[in-house]
Length: 500
Image 1 (cartoon, rainbow, N blue to C red):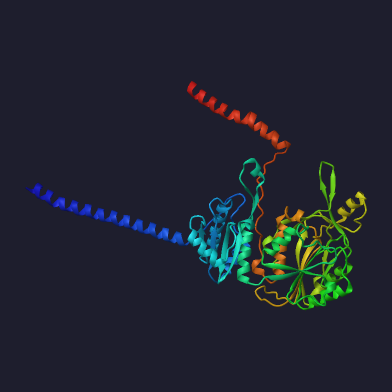
Image 2: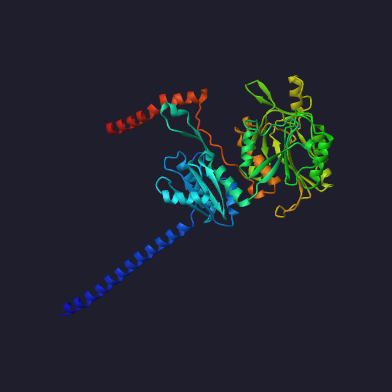
């Protein structure tokens, strides 16, 4: 009887224990599901994206990201791309990056005009679209701008005759879309005066600076050609002038206009060609504390065990002390052709309330040769040995009346001078993106658009793989010896173990 009574008392206890365990398991399952839902909700709202691709094709430049941070209202982008458009996928992936960087300020609608005719017709009528070319429309506060597919890519159709489809040679989506956005937000284009009349490169199609012209215009800037001999004063709507490689000096009348412009808080970008004789322009810059020296930068490069080659192409680096070059700090660039040295005189300029900053400095090993027209290699080598390795400056920024605090915006005169004018030409700038980035930073600083200074959109480069003789020899040993040797060693080990 006692055993039956104990068994009856034990059964309810076991049932109660099972119920408790069941409730604990259920509570744990509910808690895990709740935690998963919370983590998923937080991750949906707060997430990060990384681009680990080789060329980072869709990664937005710092300039675009900073511009998107300044947006105050909603921006809507409507994409009218049929699926067979060669760059449809590229544009879609790029706009995803814009949407992420915009932090909720950008709405995107993808529309196939061939499938949704009624919606397409409604928006075509709204935005006054009159072309059949694939495009997208950027709408901001009642203003809109169209960006065509032809503006976002260079299409190579050379293979059409062989039965191949069109190929995207270069994707320029970010330049075109960001340019349209800046245009809408800023409204009126900034005007940049371009001085002509001294054999400067023209702004016409196919000129030596056509790439530079297109890039600057894509930043919501319009050029205005200026012939100072025909003007009584530089127009009021021109707050910045650009002077690139004049081959002849300015007249006294032109220099008076330029000085009056400077005295009225004017902004000047001056790229000098050392081979041209422009003493009056040099004297103007010297008055502001930067002396352009009559010399040429050279360096001896070792081409063999005992062979040296003299070159006048300058490898230089950007200094990060100025807003112009802060995001280019320690980046290297090549300045082709002749380059002269600049001597900075900050103590002299400080008395006139003028601040000077170094922007570009030649790499170590370069020397400034004053007797640059001679062919005496022995003299060049002797001068190179005598050089005291003092850093040589080839680019500087000058500001009169500015504030030491960058957060304080004041009206001031600004000038950027570089003692080389060939690095902005098409043949150089397409090989060296850093020069384009520097000009972009300089122009935006001169226009008081510091928030837009940054790395320009990247130029896509093909993946190349080349081997020199030593690398080919090593590869031959790897393929013919080491690769067959590995399975042979493994087979030997297995045979030995089985034998034992």
